[in-house]
Amino acid sequence: MGCVGCSCSTGKDAVSGCNSNGGCATGGCNRHNTYDWITAQGISDARPFDMVEVSFKNGSRKEFYKNPPFTRATTGDWVIVESQSGGFDVGKVSLSGELVRLQMKRKRVRSDARLSSVVRKAHERDLERLDEVRQEEKKVLIQARAIARTLDLDMKIGDVEFQGDGRKCTFYYTADGRVDFRELIRHYARDFKVKIEMRQIGARQESARIGGLGNCGRELCCSTWLTEFKSVNTAAARYQNLAINQTKLSGMCGRLKCCLNYELDTYIDALEDFPDRAERLKTGAGLAILIKTDVFKRLMYYTYADDRSKFLAVHVDQIWEALDMLKSGKVPGSLEDILAMAPQVEADEPEEVEPDFENVQDVIQLPIEKRKKKKKKNKGNRDRSQSAAAAVEKAAQQDDLSQKQPPRRDDRQRRPDNRSNQRPPQQQQQRKESGPPQAKQMPPGPKPPQNQGDKRPPQQQQPRKEGEQRPPDSGTGGDNNNKGNNFKGNNRRRDKRNFKGKE
Image 1 (cartoon, rainbow, N blue to C red):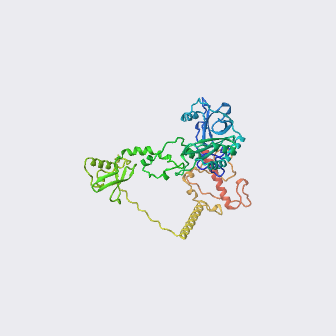
Image 2: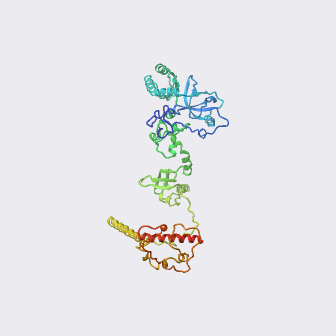
Image 3: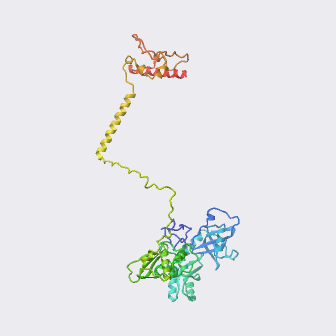
């Protein structure tokens, strides 16, 4: 889990950055972060560059070091580096490979300069020691400010940074001029018992190290991505028609906001079309005074010096025409006359293009569709209608089933004589004579003769003598109804076999 709005992760990789509650323990944790996309893509350099960029105290300070091949350190690894004042320091590799060459060129660092080197990768004990000294920095900062106040020094201690091994401590301070801090160093060395280094920084660098949130709600630009500071003056605010209010125009550092320069070029380009000396216009109705200018809409708002209850928005092209009249010796009657000089044209309004198709809006008119209003039904009537429809559907299904099932007969003698007429003519022609069923499977042999007549003669039931038993292979049993049905099924199966044999 990382802080809200940053990419720092908790654990051993974030020694003093994010805490378990999702917040930053030492200011912002997104300070001057870089993305090594070459290493992330797994691309290996044909000619590897032996320099790396190491970040200290979560991006507050970055330096370049030589990376010997035996260390095998790459982007994201914690490493032990040599310190110029003696001892060693612990940092994290932020860039490696070809991107380091471009970064050194941008910061004007020569590739053949004498730089310290990376000793090895850091292990668990090194990270634990670094965490211990980072926790002591806040106590040392409070005590250092108290000592500086007792000595009546005109300076402010902004930040404290311990070296990785804890042998050296650097104090960053801001001051208006030079400060004699020789006595201060003696007090620091006696109380903290470490090597002391004093480094003076500006107000913008102090805000970049401490971090914070701006009026826009985001982290400070100097703390996240801005590395080069440019001078900002009140002329940038005047070009953008901003009120000269020092409280609103100042940032966290107490200086003018750096973001005043971001849109300054756009405003300068847009103001080239506006007249320079148009703050006062002489008219017949009185002197007109410029109140406000809308740069992007190209409008200039005027009012009369005697009566300021009325404001008129005049286009910049109309102002140019009014100035030309004044140069020629003619005075416009009023601001309304200036508005009537030329039609007001919006600068960003696109030109109307005639369509290349025929407009049939007035030729073809579609009739208005009439919609029927649905009547609302009560819930009780709806339930009754649904139950009635279900009952009707169920009765229809029962009628269909009764029509599909053949009627049950008590005796085969009740079979109607005209049953052959109900059979389709195709089946009547293909029907064959057959004797009483003797077996379920037909034995191999000649096919029985086929009926010559169109109609099948009515079946006659031969009387059975008393005491005579039905053949055992007839396949029938049970009551008389089952006898007739089984006899009918045997005849149908036999006809089917004969029909296949004929084909």
